[in-house]
Image 1 (cartoon, rainbow, N blue to C red):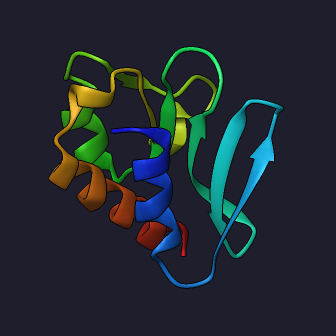
Image 2: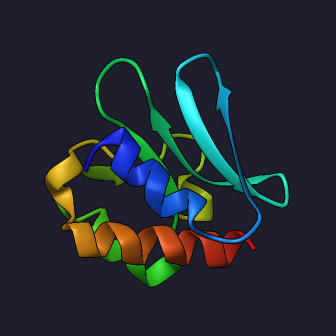
Image 3: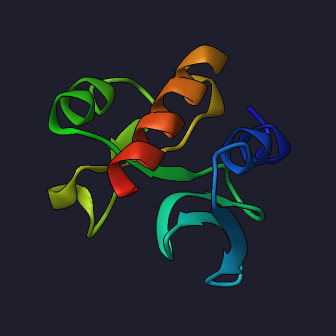
Length: 101
């Protein structure tokens, strides 16, 4: 998964906006609320919101950790782009979008 691949997934959803936050993160929002953010500089890191069950399952995988300061609201940080398959990327980004929407 590349930043551009992730961007294409995110901007395909209705009413999504994108902008750079914190100088290094490309963030995707719906209704002014972030549902996915990824680093454009430095090591690979992408964050997204999950439901409680997905959070428990995903954070057991190598390369996926609870998002610092946001884990109590079921945000994860994917630190290895291959920690999930391309189909799973689409699935979990869509779920994050739906939760935030």
